[in-house]
Length: 198
Image (tube, rainbow, N blue to C red):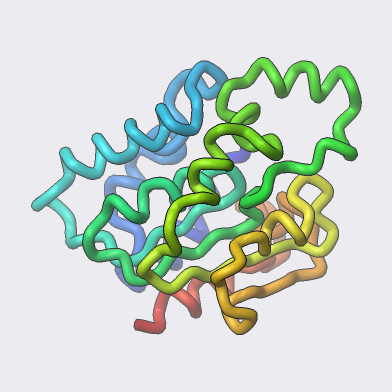
């Protein structure tokens, strides 16, 4: 599991996007203690419960950002939040992950992880969020041209999102959000810019 990129948290915190509690609890807040035992639907419910407990303690959430499978959860929670103005999805398998690049043993292992299974094409979770009405907020899609897990067609696969809200980088999946020790920028600058503009 990728480490939380504290540089991104710091930059987004500076402009008021990431509250203190995310920096304090880190990725465990978002993926839970036992990553493989929950479905994306269960994670969605869990995150909504956390947001409810924070109601009144933080400013209303106006921007939701999701990376990879977290983007699917972000899509699922956004309609249930009242004040969201923007949803930014980075390397999100909106139409499913690309099974062609998975070795048979990897695929067998991934099928045993409930939340990953929900990210395969034609899963019930994907069918449901893809049949929901268009979101009322602005949606931005960020994809990697060299992404071997989430192909462009999938990452850009929300039909109602205008072309001017779709961004493609010449990067792989994990390069879109580089790790703390990396000197690469990935899509960070764009994410910060999209987050700043009202």
